[in-house]
Length: 215
Length: 230
Ligand SMILES: Nc1ncnc2c1ncn2[C@@H]1O[C@H](COP(=O)(O)OP(=O)(O)OP(=O)(O)O)[C@@H](O)[C@H]1O
Ligand SMILES: [Mg+2]
Figure: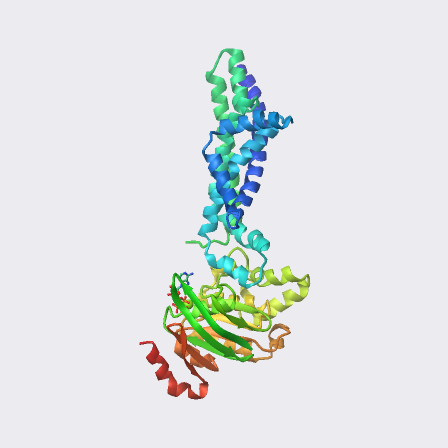
């Protein structure tokens, strides 16, 4: 019993790292993803297509390795594990976020853009105040799914030496020659975090969806 | 004065507007009639610059406001927010704008709905909010696309009164607007509605204006107009 508690403490230390990586990665992902989604409606839409194709056609583990090992080497700079992870997961997530937003934008009536145009609302404000608030509220469940997927993918950070939940569980397991308990504890940690994220997502949805038609 | 000269517009190689010429006096209410698909919306959209004509020119002083057939209120904003969004963006006189919005809502009889979201409004109420939102931008020309579609007879009569009051009554009493008159172009296939509201009706068919009548002749010529729908 005491052993369980010690294991748990060791692994729980990784939660902070995983969550920082998730928060940073998702922040970069949603910012870049929004820019990419809007870029689709300008003459620079090829940029969005290129990023999405690139991200989709390579494994995440390779993307993380390139950002951490290859690019700093080529440029002669040093990135710490967390920064590299945030950049890599952020870019990766931005491709998926921009696709989610694209679906949301396409599901809005075209008249919303036209109404804004007819009222003389400048493009920037149209996106910021008219289109995106509606889109985000419509695609909130998909965005929450993306956060959950990203949380699970952060476990790949161990390949560049990040000490997240998964890595801590492996270390604990190796030190004690016992795999079952540490890995179950890691699973439990992810499970709790996912439940928490879903709960927060539902609360936000309640607050932002008050204007939707109640069928 | 709204001057439309030789406007042509096609979609997928089909000419929808074929050298349309039209002039509307400042302060006039023009009814734009014609069978479904004849290009009424397209002409209004060209005036609002939502479509770009292939040739011809459209001239008017000031700016145009558009009322969409399906209103296109912003669903995530309350009625007040819908009215105040554009004015707040253009200047910082919040208090004055708020008074103006309340005055307009009072005049069109939906002040009690000011904090409601569009989804909770009836068709007629949405129509009023859409009108109020457009008026808040003080347009010189008001373009209305099928303002009565989906409304019952009583509500249609309300819309007639409402639009007439916007056009005729001194707008200052309507909500402290600068403008004295609003020119209107109202597209509708409902001839009865158009005869009630317009001081002139033109009929669009096969890309051209095929009839142009004044109210003194409405009674005689309405049968003629109806003939064009066959
Ligand atoms: N964006 C578009 N792309 C292709 N065709 C279009 C487009 N907009 C309009 N059309 C076509 O142009 C024609 C005229 O359309 P418009 O909406 O102007 O007619 P309308 O007179 O307003 O009809 P209604 O009374 O049904 O509203 C129609 O045949 C329509 O299919
Ligand atoms: Mg139409």
